[in-house]
Amino acid sequence: MRYVIEVYREHDGVCGSVAAESCGSPRPFHGWLELLALLEPPLPEGAGREGPPHQESPDAGWTTPRQEPPGGGLTAL
Image 1 (cartoon, rainbow, N blue to C red):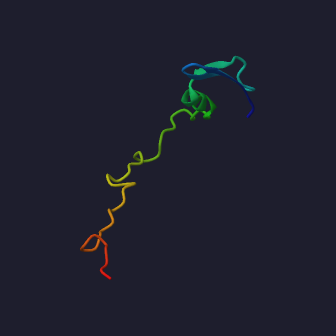
Image 2: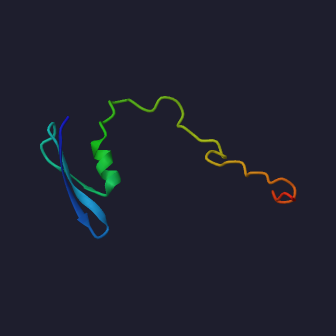
Image 3: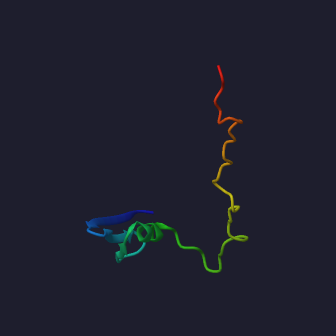
């Protein structure tokens, strides 16, 4: 699929229009997320997500704090 994308920078972000070769009229967007949504292929009728949505565990992305040895890691000479 081919797209013609016109992007303009404004004081509050980007805006513009997207025209696909299969769709005659350009569709406007305001912001990067709207642009990405316009570039996503449409889901077929009746299609939905398979299974439950992905959920991360509550501690995802966290690391265990490093344990310092007694004395704060200093060694006596």
